[in-house]
Length: 286
Length: 261
Image (cartoon, rainbow over all chains, first blue to last red; front, side):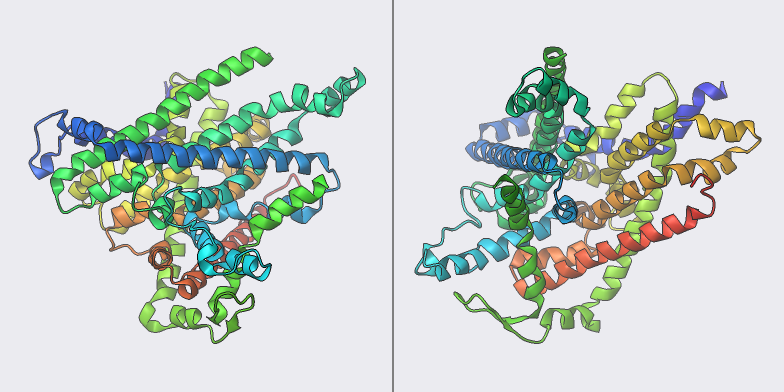
C-alpha cells in the first residue's frame, strides 16, 4: 500500500503549491461570471463577458497583444536560430561568444525596458550616434520608438531577451545531434545546405517551435513591458486587465477577470494546438 | 563574413549594457554629445543613504528569494524523483499541471487568487508573498531536476541501499552529490525568477512587503535614468554575487561527501 502511495506523497508538496495556482484560475473564472461573495456579488451572469465582447477597445487591445507577441516571438526565433546555426557551424567560436550571449536571459524585463529607453529614445544613444554620423540633423528626426502606437519599443525589449533564449535552447539541441547522420547525408551527395534543411533543421524544429510558444505565451500575458513603454492607446491586454482591476469602481473587477480568463484561454489553446502540431511534425518526419 | 554576423548580433545585444553601467556616474549628457560629463555618483549616494532604506530592502529581498529558492528546491526534489523513477496513475496529468505556470500568465492567476488571499490573511504579508513566489519557478526547478535524475538513473542509490544505507544517508551521500549540477542550475534559475518578480509581489504584498524590484520599477517607470540605472546595476550585481556565492557554497558543502569524483 505504502509503495503505491509513495510517488503521490513525494508529489504532495508541489501539488499543494500548484493547487494555489489552480484555485487562482478557478477563482478568476468565477469572478468573471460576477461571483465575488466578499463584495456581496453572488449573482452569476454573462453580462461581463457581453460587456467586454461588445467593446471595440477590447478587440484593439487583443489585436495589439497578439501583434506584439507574434512579432517579438517571430523575430526572436528568426534571428536566434540563425545565430545559433552560425555558432554551431563555427567550431572555433570563441568562448566569450558562447557564454556572454546568455546575459540577457537573466536580466529582468524591467531592466530590458530601461535599456531600450537608454538606447532608443529621441535623445538616446542611437540618436546621438546617428547625429554624429550625419544621418539626422536634429532630435525630432529620430523616430519615436517608445510609447509608440506601433509598439516598436515593446517588441525590441522582448526581442532583446528572446534572441538569446532561442540561441540557448537551439544550441542545446544542435549539440545533441548525432553528427554521423549529417556525415551520412554528405556522403550520399547532399550539399551542406541540403544536409541542414533535410537533416539538422527538422531535428531542431520542435525546439524552435517550443521556444516560439514559450515566448509568445510569456509576452502575451506579461504586464511589465507594455505598462512601462507601451502607448496609452492601444494598450496590451494584461495592462487593460490591471487598470480595471485596480479601479476604485469594484464593479469593474469581473471585467478584469473576463480579460484574464480570455488571456489564459488563448495561451492554453495555443499550447494545445502546439501539441497537435508537434504530433503531426513527428509523423511527417518520422 | 558569417562569423562576423553572429558576433555582430551578440555585440549589438550586449552593447546597451555599457551605457547602463555608465549612467549612474553621469552628471549631465547633453544631446547630441557622444561623451557624457561624469560627476559624483548621485544614484549610489541615494542608494546608500539611510533615508532611502535601500540597503535594508536589498538584503531583505535577497533573503526572501533565498527562502523561496530553498523551499522550491525542497519540494521539487521529491517531485522530480517521483516523476523520474516511479510509474503511477495520473503521471502525465501531474506533469502537465506542473508545467502550466510557464504557459498561463501569473498576472491572471494572481489577480484571481488575490481575493482568497485577503480572505485567508495571506495578502499583505511575507507568507503570502513567499507562497505566490513558489509558483513561477517551480516548473523550471522540477524540469531541471527531472533531467538530472533521468541522467544519473536509480542504480547507484539502489546499490547504496543494498549496502545498508538508510534513505537519509542515500539522499545526503549519494543522490544530492550526484545531482548537484542540476540542483545548482535549478537554484540559480529559481532565485533569479523570484528576485525579478514585480507584479505578483506588488499585488499580493499590497505594498507592505517591499522587495528590491519594487524600488527599481517606479524609477524605470519615471525614466529617471541616473537612479534607474544605479538600481539596475545594483540589482544585476546582487544577482551575480548571490549566484556565485551560492554555487561555491553548494559545491563546497558536498565536495566531502562526493566519493565518486
